[in-house]
Structures are given as structure tokens and as C-alpha cells.
Image (cartoon, rainbow, N blue to C red; front, side, top):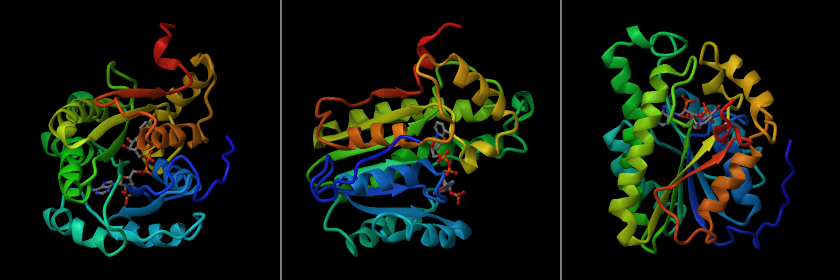
Length: 265
Ligand code: NAP
């Protein structure tokens, strides 16, 4: 595991108010981002939805400081509409938003079912995993009065993968959505970028039948190697994009994959 240094109050994200949406478990990339952001001095709010909300409330206590947990289903118009009010109970504005959310029905869409995936499930995957970036950005926009940074997580959608199937299509939609949101919010000083992470053993990844084959191949082909259990490098990249270190970068995708994407074989 990559080690991080605790610099609460004086770090890279000191004074930043950040919403991390999509934290279910300590293995969640969102959890690693929330932890790193707190270590770097940010005030963090985390969110999740439905039955897993109780789990999120429990695991929030393991973070360096227990953050407020708010309920946010990115497909629920009421949740999106009331988000600014819920945020205002804890912070007087937002500087950063992390979209760490995806869903595709593993039984119908993933693991070699591409040619049979039904539209209703594809529509749900695209709504939860891609359209939601626009929905979340629109909901948070009123709180981002001083500009800020929105960062999402993708799995490189520039090529077809084994097993990933319709989630790959949803990620292609996410990557395009991030460019359009970057275009429309740039004038307000809001940057929108994605981190393309290599495979990490999270709940979402474990639900994809056949994803382990990809994980094994990754570790051998990535020039820097790859640890499927270490979300810290990914969290650090998200943290850097949330910080003031990239003031002129938007609509970008930063690969944090051990260099896998750059190798032909
Ligand atoms: P994760 O821990 O399962 O996180 C996914 C989160 O999305 C969960 O908190 C999940 O909540 C939430 N979610 C699903 N539907 C939602 C909805 N309608 N409204 C709000 N939240 C919803 O898995 P993860 O791997 O960390 O995924 C985080 C992001 O990283 C995703 O975009 C994923 O595609 C991306 N990513 C993952 C990998 C990887 O290998 N793990 C690689 C590259 C990119 P529930 O748990 O309650 O369903």
C-alpha cells in the first residue's frame, strides 16, 4: 500500500470544502479520496444512497475525522434538488466535487453479455454512471460560487475490454459528458476532469464477472506494475486535480494505471 502523510490543516487541500459522492466501503475509491483529502486539510462531506447509507455512516467513523454523511441517489430529482440545502447544513460553499459513482447490472450487462444487454438496463447504466456527472455538477453549481474542481473516475473507454461490456459504453458516455460539462462550466471557473484508474478490487469491480482476468494481466503489463488493492495513487491524482495545482486543466483524463494504457503489448 502507498503511504500518505498526514498534514491536516496545512496540506494541498487546506481550506477546501469537498463533496465525495459514492463511498460505500473502505475499499471504495471514494473512501481513499475522502481520507487523502482530509489528510491534506480539506473539509469533507461524503454521500451514498439507499440501504448502503447505514454502512457508509458506520465506515465514515474510520476516517481521520468523521465527516457528515448525506443521502444522494443521483437518479432521484428530489435528492438533487435538495442537495444545496443539505450541503449548507455543513459547509458555506463547495470547492470540489468527486463523482465516484457507477452502476451496471452485472447479470445482464457485464461479463460477456454485450450482445444480449437489454436497453432498459443499458439506460440505467448510462444514467447512473454518465448522465449523473451532469446532474451532480448542476446540483452543486450553486454552491461553487468561487469556481472549483469536479473530478470523476473512469476506466479507459478508448478501447473494448474483456468483461467490461456495457459499462465500457457507459464510461465512454461519462468521458464525453465530462468534456461537455467542462465546456459549459468553464466560464464559472469550474474545472471538470477524470482519472482513468487501473483495476481496483472494490465492491463494484468484484461484481463484474471475469474482471479478475483483467486485474492479473494489468499487473504484468503495466511498466510501473499495479497493485489492485491500493487505491491511494488514484486518490492522490484526484486530490491533485481538486487542488490549485492544475488551474488551467479541464476536460482532461489523467491515467493512473501504472502506464498500462501506453503499452501496445
Ligand atoms: P464502489 O465502492 O462500489 O463505488 C461505487 C459507488 O457508486 C457506490 O458507493 C455505489 O453505492 C454508488 N452508486 C451506485 N448507484 C448510485 C446512485 N444511483 N446514486 C448514488 N450513488 C450510487 O466501487 P469503486 O470501484 O470505488 O467505484 C467508484 C468509481 O470508480 C466508479 O465510477 C467506477 O466505475 C470507477 N472506477 C473503478 C475502477 C475499479 O477497478 N474499481 C477502475 C476505474 C474506475 P452502493 O454501494 O450503495 O451501490
